Image (cartoon, rainbow, N blue to C red; front, side):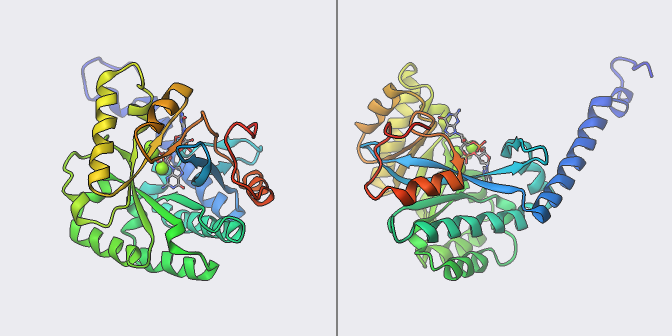
Length: 286
Ligand code: C2E
Ligand code: MG
Ligand code: MG
Ligand code: MG
């Protein structure tokens, strides 16, 4: 077929579009099969306090391919969301996170784990009661679980959002706004919803120290968080100069390749169960 340039026909016969649809279906099948075959994995990336001590971690999902390779979440999360498969997948991720919290509980009673929650999962029926049941089942202190949501979720249906978050926050579950600074700019929700933490987007952190406007934005977010009594996490810390810069702002947590990459649960657990003292970064070779 010879496409006539400038006509709509081009779109209908575009082989790339056809291929992407095929790929989307293939990935959807892959997600379904991986749920059945238990080929999803949780990887954990540590979060450090100002002194560089690991005090919490973010749970990040990966799909193990049949050939042993790893598929990154960027390749399947949006398809899981669009197909509704994020609901069973998200439920499994929460169970894994609670199981991990349970396993480190006696060694590290204050250690926190953050779990990303998609809007489709958050608004699915029974989300709040599922989370509470899972916490009870594993005997996990709710305050050790943080749910990361994005600003776009927060502005969707404030009444419904407030009801769901309220049920969980009343029991002690923490909420963090992920990728803060990149979404909707109306900050009204910060005073209406039980948010505990802002996670400054990597896009701002990576510009430190070269870009003065990024520095100004990070300083402003930090000042606002202090006034609102919110915790701050900086994500995407890759360089020593960023760490030095951020730790002088005041108390915060930092996450990034400079400290640690996400690692497999097994490796992470071995390390966190074996060490009894708190771990200074740099002591472990990731
Ligand atoms: P996110 O929640 O903002 O997670 C942080 C991402 O940044 C992770 O990518 C992490 O590996 C990466 N990262 C951490 N430190 C650095 C750094 O210093 N430099 C750079 N360049 N990257 C860094 P990952 O694991 O590929 O996840 C990508 C996104 O996929 C996540 O962004 C989140 O939106 C989504 N995602 C991951 N796991 C889950 C999950 O269990 N459920 C849901 N709903 N979404 C998830
Ligand atoms: Mg996150
Ligand atoms: Mg993020
Ligand atoms: Mg992100």
